[in-house]
Length: 195
Image 1 (cartoon, rainbow, N blue to C red):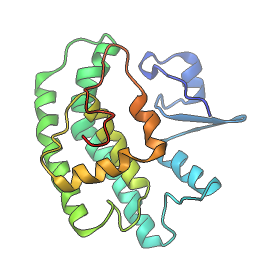
Image 2 (cartoon, rainbow, N blue to C red):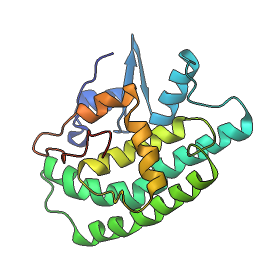
Image 3 (tube, helix red, strand yellow):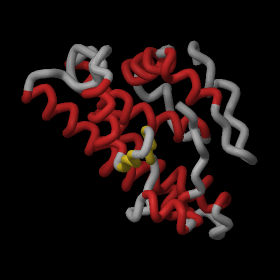
């Protein structure tokens, strides 16, 4: 598998031909092009079911899907778009300066989400239950992007910090931690497993 950088904000005709929604990620497998992260992940879980990303029972699958939607919709709208988009995406897209109102809003809302994660982890080993699932990776993707710009207060919850340390230590996550955004070097703790 080859990772290709896509400047989706430039809306190139080739990109829009592959994904008219204008969103990333896109997965190309042979002649097939797939979009929408949740659909891609569930597809991959079905074609390569070991280790499973989705539990087999309907109630457990529902909880994973609920949490994936929580992070990809609610967390994204309230936090990621307010912090990462304002501080990084605007600069990359040459779209002006960060809106301080949005940054302040995102910085406030992340506390609520970290507290919710802490509550989940008080009752479960992983976010959706007793085994690691796609919900953990959905949450970790957002937190990793925000940690890259030092916007996560890891001292707020020991449970969330421990959970993220377990995710960071996964071999599949190491390539994400090695990736860098040109013009934005990560903080020293970003790739440190014992942050």
